[in-house]
Structure formats: C-alpha cells, structure tokens
View 1 (cartoon, one colour):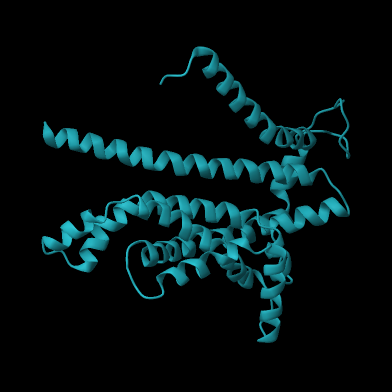
View 2 (cartoon, rainbow, N blue to C red; view 1 turned 180 degrees about the vertical axis):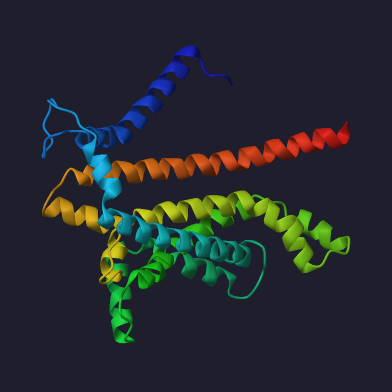
Length: 272
C-alpha cells in the first residue's frame, strides 16, 4: 500500500530531524576549527583558517595520522579475510561444533572495550610483549574481526546454496566454485566489512589507550588535548578526520558503481 502524501512528508521530516540530530555536534566542531580565538565562544567574532595550515604542517599530527591510518588499513585487510572464511565456516558448512563456533566468535562484541583492552594488556605483559602500535592491531582485531564476520555472514545467508551446488554438479572444483561463484557473490559483504573495520579501528579509543604503549593514535591525542592543554588544533584535526572518513565512504560507494557501469557497457557492446 502506497503511503499518503502526508505520511511521506512526516517520514521525510523525521529522517531530516534524525540526520540533523546526528550531525549538529560535528557542525559545532567545524565552527570551533575556524574561530580565531583560542577558545570557542558564540557568536564567533573573527574567523580564521590558519589552524588547518598548522595542522597540515605539524609533524606530530602527521605522525598520528600515519599511525592511525596504518593500524586501520591493516585491521581492515585482515578483518576482511577473517570475516570471509569465518562466515563460510558457520553459514555454508555443517560440522559438529558449528553452533559453538558461531557463539564464541561473536562473543567479544559484547565485552566492554575498556575491559577487553585491559585484559589484552595484561596478557601482553604476562608473555613479555611490549605494547606498541603493532599490539594495538591485535587488540582491534579481537573486537572488530567478529563484527566483520557477522557482516559477511549476513550476506552469505542471503545467497542460495544451490548456486554453488550447481557449479559442483557441473564439474567445478572447490577452488573454482569459491573463486567464480562464492567470492563474487560475497564481495559486497566483504567490502562492507572492510569499510566498517577501517572506520571502527580509525576512531577506536578504549582499545588503543590500553595497547599502543609509547605510540599514540589520533583518538588518544585528541582526548589528551581535551583534558589538558586544549588547542584549536583539536577541532581542526577532528574535522580533517571526519572529512577523510566521509571521503572513504564516498570512494567505497563510487567504486562499485563504476565497476557495474563499466561491466554493463561491456555487456551491451558484446550483445550488439
């Protein structure tokens, strides 16, 4: 049943209100980043963009961005692999401990991140590993890899197993079926899992706080600057981080569209 015009306007207004509620705080941070004053006051008397220049020229900010970006990229790549095979393990194959595996692999999601970070730190100390940005990767994976697995599994459950069975019936090997049927069908879920993993790792504070050791990530630096020694660089770096995240999302949405467009044009050319 098609909703009435009034219902459509109500739903549209509700959606706009939710979006405004979510993004108004970011707008406030944007105003703080262009204020010439050291501390934010409303109304802003003088605007300046010098803080963006200082942020881009700062070696500290560059190092923080490099560390956070390295951790997030590695976590995203490993999470995609773990999520792919983990999802297949309980969404495609029947084996004795399948149910228990499904529950245990998703269990870390329900742990508070501070407790999980402290537990991982104590474990590293007990085996003599010095925390650094590399140990932060392990900590992030403990919490993020199950989320990636769940995302890929949702996609795997929506695919008809008969497609894979038909490929095997026609003589395809397990590897051929995986490469030609399973992987292309699961690819949207894998990309989504990688995108979520990157964003969750990029903005993660609790796990990084406990496991980076002498190294520091961008969320840790922002927190330290907020509790002591506030500088307009804080909202400026925050806005740069948000812009980078939006850019990543846009790229992730644009690339599949371009691929589908190119494939559609090639199919039309071959038909003609």
